[in-house]
Amino acid sequence: MLEEVLPDYAGVVSRDRAKMYRSLGRLQWRRAHLKRDFQALADSEDKQVKRLGHDLLRPTRELFRLWARCRDGTQSRAGPPRRLGPIRREVEGLLLRGVFSGNPRLRGMCEELWQHRDWLWTFAEFEGVEPTNNAAERALRHAVLWRKGSGGTDSHRGSRFVERVLSIREACRQQGRNLLEYLVRCCQARLESKGSPALLPKACSHLEVA
Image (tube, rainbow, N blue to C red):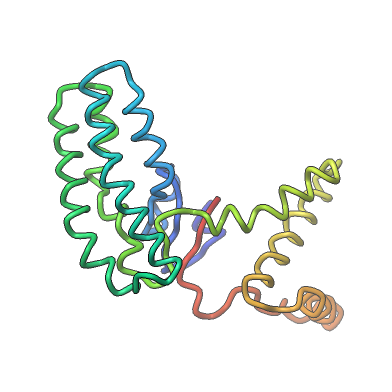
């Protein structure tokens, strides 16, 4: 199903750890989700789980501090890959500690993260990829507010229309394109029995899935 929606997609997909997305190739697992998972460990009553949770939160917070400096311009993007080395080694060492802990509360999650550890750091290799899905959540905000104000739709056809128009609206916004102009071109193409004008930029290399 995903391959049909995103045929031959060769970019980076920013997503949580849902297994259905692994077939798409290169992923960036969302660090904000992982931070919540680590916090859940730190809140555990099990002392072993609690300790590892706190230990994993420490480098995670350092990662977010480093990335915040990149976002506000006080740190160049060329710097993080070098400075991430110690953070990455610390996190991966802690994950191995969880794998061999013998604690079922830790072993499953840590083993999954260890086996796919490269997906935790994809953002350091590719320009435009971030460790969180903040951009995707911002993109959904307009749709959420529309649904809240309108009450949604009453039919399958209406739902398909709304989801497509809102997707087009957001794609145009991100690309700085005029929404009405694009829709007019679509209508003209339909009347002339031509293919719809391209919506995605040719150089699209990063996809965030909310």
